[in-house]
Length: 205
Length: 228
Image 1 (cartoon, one colour):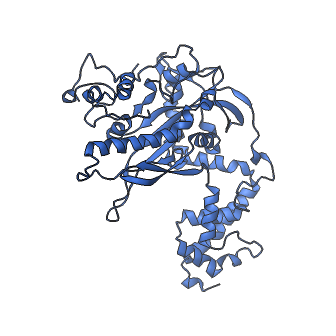
Image 2 (tube, rainbow over the protein chains, first blue to last red):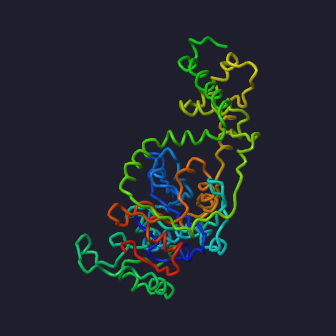
Image 3 (cartoon, rainbow over the protein chains, first blue to last red):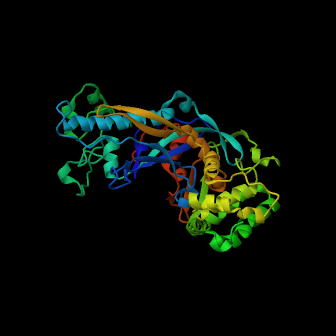
């Protein structure tokens, strides 16, 4: 489980006014193989729930508290023999496409209207001023690598060297500096990004 | 009516009257708005018992009075005695018949055979069922589950031009979840601190965490790592 609340971004920023109600948005996704022998179909669903529902209820399958909110497009397999598109370029473009779609899906959370709060009907029979904030994304490592735009042999949280992964370090390692990555991405400074295993594209998170 | 011996529903006929007519009678005698609560309690009986055993460790729970405050009251339409709880189904019997087909996972072919055999005529000659085929049944079921609505878009990926993707509006989905009756008794609206009998802070739900409290209560919010 990855917690996106440890750093502020456009989907989590902002304090709530007195009386406001935080609606923690939980997302979960995993690319799913659906069929064999008929085109090898894949689905990439993104599910959503809210943290206001107690976890014992939320995690009971028959309560249907996790709702599919998006089916992401799955890019074609990387092809070597296209002169105009190298394999690396295809990978970056596929990532950028997924993040563009995620930006579109999550856009309502970064709108100014959302920063001011929505009056929502709650089931206890009251209106509340609700502030939906993205707080959590449940995903496995490969999914995290896609969401955070890192190479799959790097840690999505800190800048531990790849040959030290799995080893305990008492002092710990610095976390990824997302501000620096954004600045490097704007300057197209691919070398500093590659040094930390970060891919050069515009990440929605 | 065709010969029951040749009907694919022979083992179910005896149950039909008992199951969905029985349901109709009970739902008519009870207040309609309690139906979903009962289902929720039935579904959660196991999880609630687990929760009770966990709650014995929690000695004190302190809620923050400045967060999650209601603005004004809302009256749900189902409190109106004329509200049709089974919409888009006209009557309870229509809903429970659809529920029965879904519960036994009847195929489209079997549903059509059911209406072709005219089995319902023997049960209640005065009632006209709202649907008479699998197609009209599925249309009604789709209408009952049309929230939150789906939208479509197309990506402009050079190697996969025009590939569609589908999504719901995330705010509409939040609104949909917040007003679900099924979760009414198990929702939290503000941060809460929990302590055990020794006075140690405990963390269980999202609203008992430090981040949740800081975001809603503290004016000194700072980005913090999950390990803090």
